[in-house]
Image 1 (cartoon, rainbow, N blue to C red):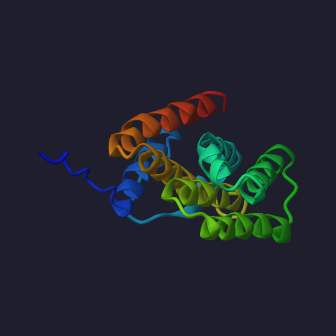
Image 2: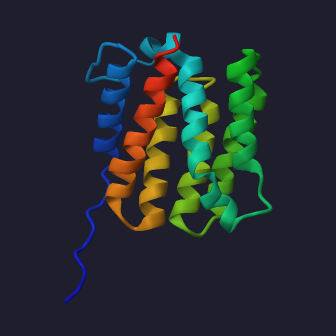
Length: 171
């Protein structure tokens, strides 16, 4: 008897569900079309949340590529921007592209998704909805790491949303 085949994560459906949950937590009207501007007032909260989402799965990348610090650097740049508000597009873009380039050298999906999560997190400084990408990649990283879709969709997803609720309760 073969083990039951795991369902696949559908990125489009996942993105919709995460965006809807985030909108609810931040009391932002939810629309079928993504409106980046409605997330602008919460951009720094979203950046810190995205950095935590990426940081939560960073070990998957660092286990495979211990000498590649680009995803870690992207998370650090994200946190620095959220704390200081100092924005230099060349720094933000460089950190984001560096993390995404690091994903290309990783072999395992969990490592790739973790690096992409970091790249999306720092890009939140430019466009607030990139935080959603960090969440999605974090969920996919956890599911890829364990091989169990619900570890990502349920366990990681719930952890992320609870964390965002904590950030939102302080505004």
